[in-house]
Length: 230
Image 1 (cartoon, rainbow, N blue to C red):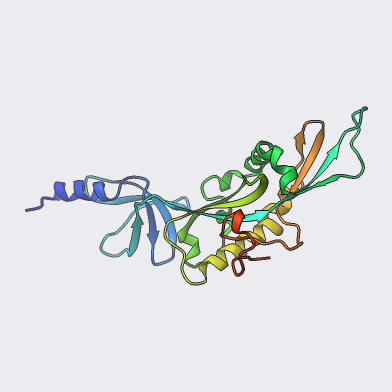
Image 2 (image 1 turned 45 degrees about the horizontal axis):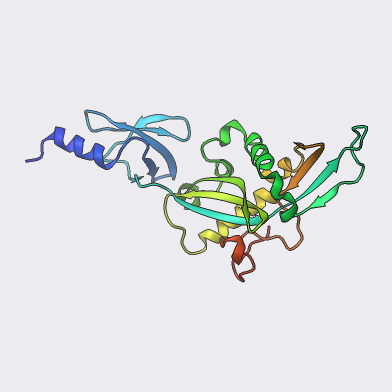
């Protein structure tokens, strides 16, 4: 016969601390802190509250598996202002695209990380997602990054998923992140000075010229039907 102590031990093996908890009644997400000796699920909610789940009344789901990674690629371009022999910046910038930007991967990645706000540390761009739908809990986090593929530097929206996306969820996620690249997060980032060598670099996550964000890799970037423009 299963004793209560063995039941608690079993539940702790199934749902370790750090598991994500979804409250089905309102879509609130949280992180499981522990299952105490009384069998209560103690949760640190993303809203800042700390409560114990009521196993009789609360309807919830727990995700204890590692998140799945989804990468959405998009082209980058930049403006480089070089300095002359007297240290003055040029009036007109040199326009750079993917191949030209590849030597600056480290500088751009560092600038992307520095542009993050403290409240974005856990969920990144998903901190600002305001829709009460499946994406609000399926997408654990999304951060802008950069990668080199075939000598070209690409922008990447690196997403961590708690469950696979279905139906139009990928299109809705892509639309949201494309908006962040164009008018939200990316609008602030493109004004950030990135010191490189003897000049200043400004990087644009969106340029409005045949721009698209795609779930396929850069080597398949021209595949039809996968792009999404803001």
